[in-house]
Image (cartoon, rainbow, N blue to C red; front, top):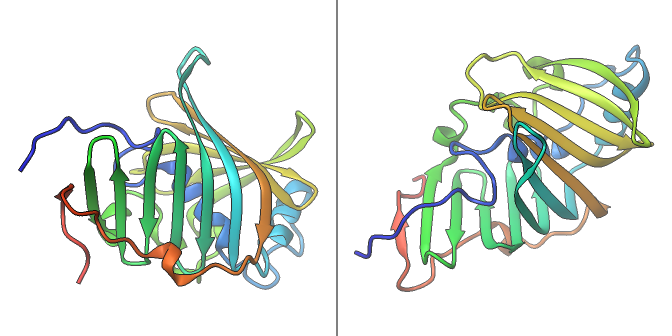
Length: 225
């Protein structure tokens, strides 16, 4: 088997990045009545997520250092479908992340390498119960209104669990539409995701959420059984 250096996948931390978890929030249902007395941006967030089963969107993703300087830039298209299925097609750099609900595949064509993880293991350090599609946002996060900045209304999510990879997620809304996500990790780095051409409840083929490693690539790990 060939030995090649492993590299970080498009700015995502190991054990499933906070950005990825943040985007999974976009396909979670909101419990009935949860937003009835929620003020400002939180109420809009809840209305925007209610009834949302799938998403297709273009994105740019930037990893910023402690001083705000850009460390990595990525772009591509994402596909999300409840429960727990997602696909990130990175065009810059060329990489692919696919989850079928049980197995997470990370494919790096340049390294000719596929990393495979069971989704349960990948989420062991995150609020995994959010992926069930049954939990409310407030079950995993402390939520506060972040005010208005840069033409967007902000909601700030702080994980209640102490063993997550990230400290805080900021969700930027234009009306009821998700436009920007920012999350800060424990290294004081910040990942910023800008969404464009977002399509709610898109019809997404099952094949988008399946993956077969190309012939000849190195495969690290094994799929869930």
